Amino acid sequence: MDLTAVVTGAARGLGLSFVQVLAQAYCNIAILDIGAAPTEAIESIRKEHSVMVMFYSCDISSKIKVEETIAQVEKDFGRIDINVNAAGVVSDEPFLSTSEAILDRTFNINFKGSYFVAQACAASMIARVEEARKSDPSANSGGSIVFIASISTYIPSVAQNISAYVASKDAVRGLARPLAIELAPYGITVNSLSPGYMMTDMMRGLQQQQPDLVRQFQRETLLGGGEKIGQPEDLQGPLLMLCSRRAGGWITGQDILVDGGAGSWKHPAVLGN
Image (spheres, rainbow, N blue to C red):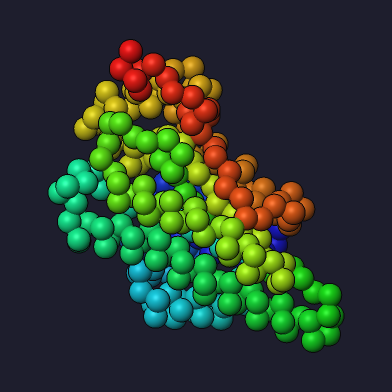
């Protein structure tokens, strides 16, 4: 695609998987994360795909930090075409004991962080379109913004107490349609992906702590045959489609649930039968 993508939460997990598939499509990548840089992965991606990959340490819950970082990305890469917002945190805490600190951290990263990064990237895309329209009034290829929501916004979790997380991901999912309306005049598509149960580093940790819970997720996942859940690679195709002008350029304001069928029914295991 020969484009530049800004991907948050990409030091590991789903975000890093998204970086890998975008690099395969010949996108240059700006990784935003508060954690340590995935140095080995970055070098491997650079060498294998001959693309530019840079890491930026950024607290995405700070609007000022985000604006400064995106301004630096523009200087380093020259343009921004794609924004994937994959940063997220979750706390398993009962509703009645959820503290203000947990609620603030969850919304600051999951919702505000996604909002601020998308806002800054959209401003960059719009500026590029407006500049292009000075010589070509029909210029309309602004870019693509993708938010990462969750299956939990479709079906409740009976085994986890994650009300703050679900509310934050509902808010993220709710951004797609209003932003699609606002940004359509610039040719910017805005969508969200809702992953089902995915075998990420976070899920592996959960598997060690609560193996019965992960086995339940496996039983709920239709395409897993009751024995497995999704892999990060299962999201790469849908993500790439939404970022591609050719494949997803006529899709905007939508959420795509990618869950192996887990959200399409209620397995007896969930109901305790």
